[in-house]
Image 1 (tube, one colour):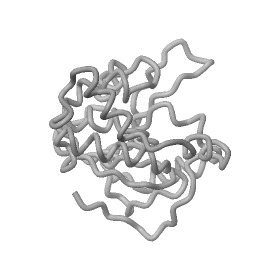
Image 2 (cartoon, one colour; image 1 turned 45 degrees about the horizontal axis):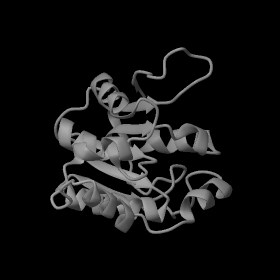
Image 3 (cartoon, one colour; image 1 turned 180 degrees about the vertical axis):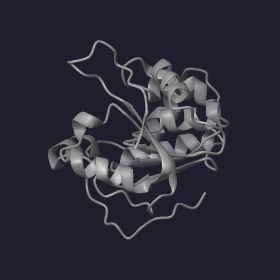
Length: 196
């Protein structure tokens, strides 16, 4: 897919303590593929819909992803940046169900490695590009993204103004922010997109 990567250095998405919490641990690819195989699922090719219970572990799961995609009016061929992509469930959903071209950004090596493996096995590697990087210093060129997407990442980012500034920087002039977060002040977990 060929991301227009800028010269911004890679650091952490959240505080160093939060990143260390997620970064430490075993390689996940073998365990996940083994568990899927043991459950009788085809692993090559892998149906991305078989992963919904595993790789969309944010509140309301796949339903939240599909609803937010509808609210954000994500269309075929649009370039979407998934900030804090984790193991890539929403990125694969947007590629498979909305025909989007997705850049899955996450600072955690083992999550990114598993994301790449699941995309390859799902035959979505040509539509989902996995990039390790920091939401506060997004390694993508200015004005190249149609939709910045994030789900359940906000609490993990210590410098929210920097993250928002970076999201705005990478968006095209008529780009959109699709943000899904749980808020104590609101009764609804889904929040619509807004033009920036």
